[in-house]
Image (tube, rainbow, N blue to C red; front, side, top):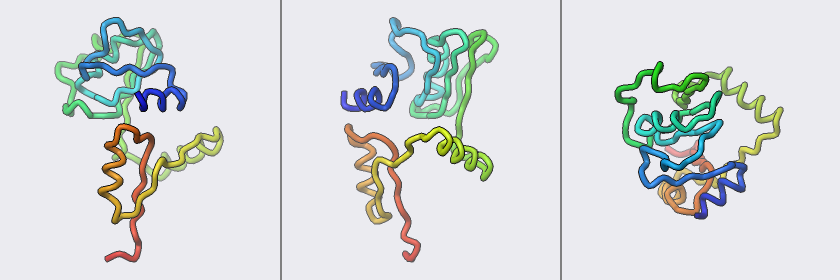
Length: 146
């Protein structure tokens, strides 16, 4: 319940907690945009909950699968809808600068929730796993450490 309120306060329209991570509840409405953090396990179901012109962004793999089994883009992506993805492993200096320019132009708040020193890595993990954590944590490397 704490994270639900944090997401609403951050500007999300609705937060759905599904008992089955592969599927949204049957009565769930349709949406314009869905960020799918579960990934290949749930992306086909997420696509089925889009309004016309809607977008699913699959950016996570929390469901434990790395590929989408039996995926047919022609039949699994509804007409007029879009499936996008994001991988943090494919970042260039140009894309990073574009991101910084967007943040500056639109005054996007990107402050980290917590900052830890390298010797506090266990505390950083504990924070991220806690029920009341929210946002990104940064671990600073000590440049003088061996």
